[in-house]
Amino acid sequence: MAATVLCPPNADDRDLNRSLISRRWVTTNRSAMTLLELVLVLSILVIVATLAVPSMTRMFDSQKVEKGADLVRAQMGMARVKAIRSGKVTAFLFQPGSSRFTVLTFDSLAGRDSLQGFFDGQDEDSRSSNFDFSEEQLPRGVRFLTGEAQEDVRSAFETEQVGASVGMVKPILFYPDGSSQDAQLVLANDLGDQVQVNLRGLTGSTSLRRVDP
Image (cartoon, rainbow, N blue to C red; front, top):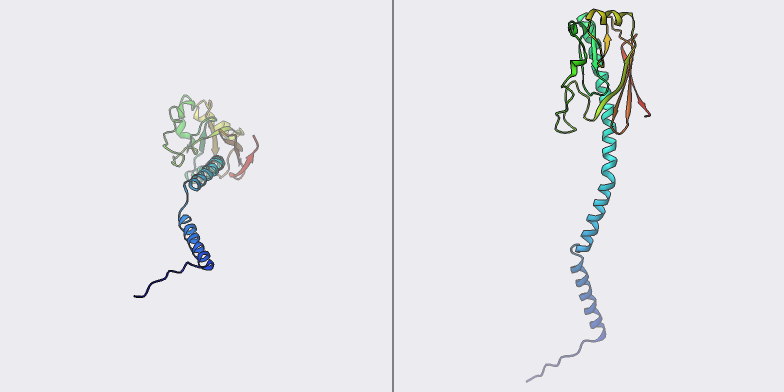
């Protein structure tokens, strides 16, 4: 009966086996992230988000002031068109410190004791988020900071005809011939971003300009 002789592996075979085992061990251990690596990645993501969110929020709030100014500009254009088509003096009404405004024919205000109560109870912002749109209202967090219309002979006459006390509510008048009062409004948010809306009376055209607080 033949005896089986087991020969010990030579040095080359032992080195090859150790190399294969080492490769299998490395491959097995790199098949997934370790808990430490996962924690490090999550920590980096949290830090990046913490740094990025305030910057994005700041940019978003700044853009809302510009959108508010664009909205005012568009509404003034509508007031001018309405005055031309109706043949009646039309007013853009707003109140400094408020976010509300409206456009209507000026003679519809006749008989009012005061324009001051026109926006009473209307400045409450019932929108559920920053993305909600509301007619006759500036974007959430934006308000009229200041605003003045240059009084002229026609505006003094129209105001006298209406007979209403202006108070804090500011009317800017647009006339049937396409002209308007010269006016200047400043919109702002709580962060101090400001945009100026300039209305040129001769043509009824508007322009926007960023303002340093």
